Amino acid sequence: MPTTEAPTPGAPNNGDDGLWQAGWYRFAKALRSPNFGPRPTDAQTDLIVLHSISLPPGEYGGDAVQRLFTNQLDWDAHPYFQSIRGLEVSSHFYVRRNGELWQFVSCDDRAWHAGASSWRGRGNCNDDSVGIELEGLEGQPFDEPQYETLASLCAAVAQHYPIAHIAGHEHIAPGRKQDPGAGFEWRRLREQLGWNPQMFPPQVTQR
Figure: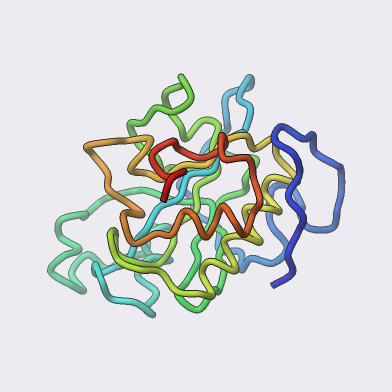
């Protein structure tokens, strides 16, 4: 997947760069989710939130995540699904173990990925963040192709939106969420992106 040079924090949108159309990223497979809404009129999309997800937990390669985000999951297909029955959620992006990239919601819109949350002195992180799900289990390692796709995606997002912060779900919802967890290599992502350490949670800048 092509890489894109990251801008300085807070860099403005540089116009039509060929990578984006109405918030949809050119190099992602588009599968539209009904679970989204408009961002507040005064929202500044300056945060990337990283998550991990697998359905059932720890099982990879199926299409259950895509079905969940599009309200098509068969709740009776696995016992675990009963615990999330009726859940209506989404994320902007989903990175498979092999690096394959999916997009469910335009980044111009508000996806439903963060829940009750707070970061950089603001609550309701769904309002002004881009959510990226990594196929994986919280606390467990992620694969090389995922880091390659993630770094490329984060750079492209930051070229188009005024990204000034990046954090995990565990950081914006401490005590409630633990993903992506200890298995995620924050140092590796920092080195790939070359972003200012101040853009990252202080909890991970020494990892």
